[in-house]
Image 1 (tube, rainbow, N blue to C red):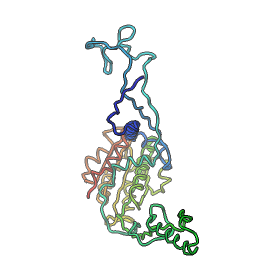
Image 2: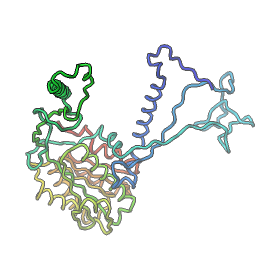
Image 3: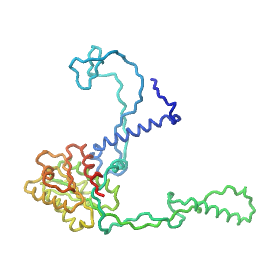
Length: 391
């Protein structure tokens, strides 16, 4: 079937595929961003390496083209029985709309799958997110090395630090020395080809300078009680896993602490936090109080940016509600931001999400509710959006 495209005025007509590649790249990026919510809520994302690949469906690219078909004149009218999406003027063998019943003979859309790694996924996530309220604190243990000024040359190094001019000068010096050693016996023409050797290579020597950075700690608190079924626990772990990947990718020397709780809370290592399941009743205050003790003992507010993130389904034993409210207010007073994520709540009017929003008026308190798996990406954006950051 003929396809017409006017490329006579196009300066890039020597490569007509450039525009197609550009459009293809835009479609890929659009599809990835539209599917971020589904990818991030996958159970298989937890614990995967940066090379883990995820498949994303992408609609094929179509050019404008002429097709054979009926060319009816006039304006089509309906009879009042049409539904949304029906096309007027198209009829089947019986003169009425086919209604897409039974097997059809029309050409479908081209849909194919592309793959994206977890590392590439982080590139899209990192664009619009930052730690909110990240302030300069008193410096303690966190000291990093940053590249300083160039300080001379060395014979070994990495390619980006190759000192080209100094390398050429080393080669010329060796060439002149070789000529003098031969005492001008060999003519210039005979030694015209004089290739570089590894001994000629010179690299910039860069002196590292110590650089102090703002101290920050992420405290992940997760409800692992009986009301948190497997779906909710996987969703909570997906939230924390993506958060930890994002934070480690964008910021250096961020400390992490992990707390899981039922009616009692305990600090756990990272592996147990993401893989170990428990059951029992729910005291929200137990997890928050362990976080408060940890902050007071190890992470003083004057020296650290503190980011506690708590995930639960919002169910709590009623006798613990007042203690939970007090603990949230206390932890907000010590934190740069306190994030509360409520996952797949069983009822939307009696959970702690609504009570927290009603009674907690701290500016650094951020709450989100995830009613469906696809809401997870929006919840992450709300917690870590740049609009919350204070310069």
